[in-house]
Length: 229
Image (tube, rainbow, N blue to C red; front, side, top):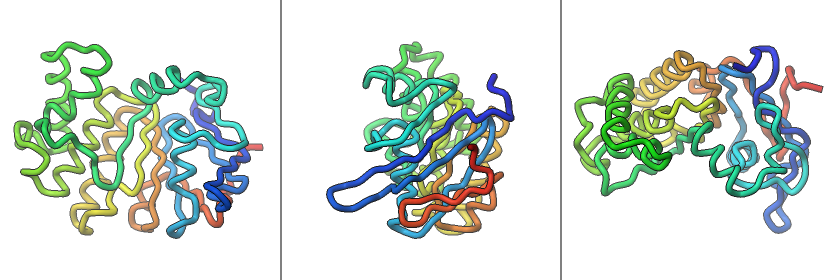
């Protein structure tokens, strides 16, 4: 287990451009084990790009990203893919559930992709659906459930393999305030119980209020009073 005082995930001096547009211009972030960090900023500020770089989805043009002492930049594509599958979890604004699968099968999918047998994968998936208060829709498909229910299924899928870091990009952006509050309450509760760190991208102060600390992104740069040297 990573020491609570030592950052588990660190991104330093990250630069990323898309054509002539600089999405990140020296941004930095650090996250400790079990910590919930809200990445805030207006639309177009670079906060989603910062998340994608920190998660190893998009490589930065320059700068360093380390996870548990390992440099993501030095990993092969296969190694980064395995890291995202086994130690990282993801929740996006629209859930991105597989429409042809039931909610139970969606949650079990990461386990199945990692070689877990169907019965065991679905047993563990059912437990997470129960924790996220959507056990009653286990055998329905995503198109048959509400947006709030679907997003809680997406959270269950992200946490089913007990990742050490959960990346959540505007997880309540497509929900009304009531459903958004419920999703955030259950997401943060489940993450804390599992000792999972959370990188939470949002532009809403009510969502950021669930975090332990905020990092503000503006024009591709970050402001964080706790930034490690």
